[in-house]
Image 1 (cartoon, one colour):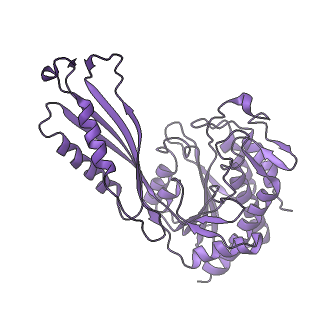
Image 2 (cartoon, helix red, strand yellow):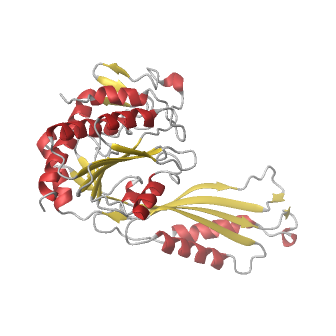
Length: 384
């Protein structure tokens, strides 16, 4: 057993109700643990968000673990079988908010790092990049930490993100890339009037419908190497008209595009703005498009690093992981500016759900995979 028990540390972290943006002492728990192992720790606070960068060693290569201590809200607390922040163990399963996403992964890598430090296996540096702003808007978390570290000249050679990547069974999937994401708000401003006198008004609703029709009528692509096709989804349409005989003054909509490397966020934003200009021709009102790019698509090319990660999974779990780019976004989208990044964690089926839970055996398996990964990493890259 490790000198550091990942189950106990996970429980300690879960018992800090760190719902974004609150930290509730979670970062203090992790910092104290890492300091006791000999890590040099830096708290990097931006706005109201607590972040931590900790490093053991000063030499290269520097293998970083990235993760987050913040969690999503509990939701209906009465629907939980146990207190969401009590971190109770029931029949070999740890129940609590953050058990899967992703306090257990943080604890598992900390336990693996403790073993590596104690056995002298660190032939370079190990580091942790931990944020309290992954589940929120992510503006004061990993993004700003990465920018600050790069400005200082800090070098991270490779990174493992502890997101719950496994789909059905532990170790069956590793993420080597993610699609990009762009959110777009559309507001069509017309002229309010009586429905019996449409010539005195300018109805924004048909203009909005036409714009959405044009946007949804385009097939963005048929897919991209290692990526599924990009998709555009309209998420809301709002007019807010309380009556039947009134032409409304405005109509709005929101949409999201998850896109592969065939596109960039800027290119998609320009396309939507161009379509908006086209439908606004001859309309006496105006169409306002407000895009927000959450992240660009990226891919970590298969090679020595991805093979090393796959080998660690094979060694411990006995299965060949699928190298995938599926799913939503993660903080890997920011870290990829510094180095190659791969995501590896627990089975994600219960993340964000009532009774979020992780089997103790899988948490220990994850620790073993991380330990094997660290061992293989320095054997491979410290002598490269």
